[in-house]
Image (cartoon, rainbow, N blue to C red; front, side, top):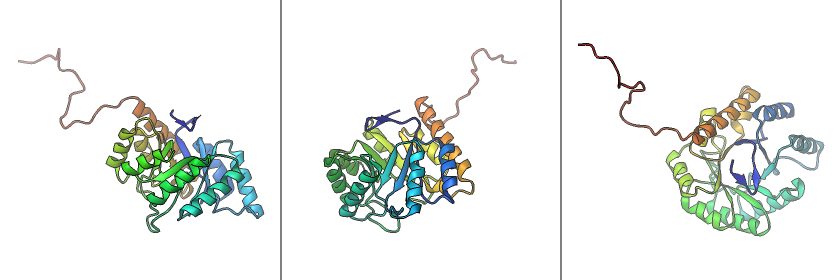
Length: 257
């Protein structure tokens, strides 16, 4: 397993903590997923009331590294300010950096993203940037100090899977030594497995589990799929071919005359 800023994850699943029917279901789903990282948004929970304090206590009790995010931020200033608040509250230098540029698709503003990543990296943050699969953007983020890339599979919450598999495959091949997580758009276990088959190091998802009819069962399915995809990639799978090839050798076959 590749390291994320020096941390080796026990398994390749990162799970979000928003939109679950109840805190109890969140905790049970997280245990079922055996996820290695919990992501959470500072902006969506109130730190001034009891509900917020209970939520944060539950998250800490999960016993895994926390990855706060800057969800809902649309400017560099918003994202940087939110990141500083998250670091103070959760006592971690990790930050999932989101700077949204398009309201309907929640596509990241890659120009603001690179600038915010540079500022935060210089201030000691370990940045996990939510980005597109664009090779140039990836290069700029790495130059800004990021050691991890988190390209989207599809728009956040869409469940569409991997919209641009060619782009994701190219990104993985172009930066073979960079830790990469497919983030957003995963809707089915097969999507998670496919991302791992392409050689990515982890998948991050939230809505597919939280909004499932049975979040606990879906969490368990996602965990198995991510691990299966990772094992398949490590096994060096066969390349597809246009022609059939017999699985039973024809050498030594008896011929009737």
